[in-house]
Image (tube, rainbow, N blue to C red; front, top):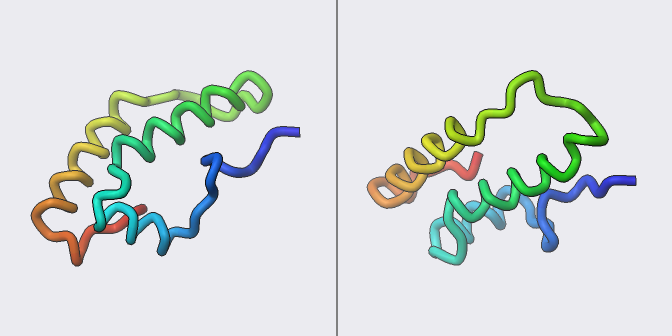
Length: 77
């Protein structure tokens, strides 16, 4: 049975937000974890009509910029 976790150390959204703001992690690091997890499950679930990692990377770039410019408003979502 596949794990429902997207990380080897599952964290809440509040914990992720704090980790992003402190620099403990980055949007790109979280994205890499999520993409690895999704790719690992895709053969079992066949859940994606279109898999768009390039778009996700652009969104991670935008999130990183937002985090640098306005950390108090940046969302981990």
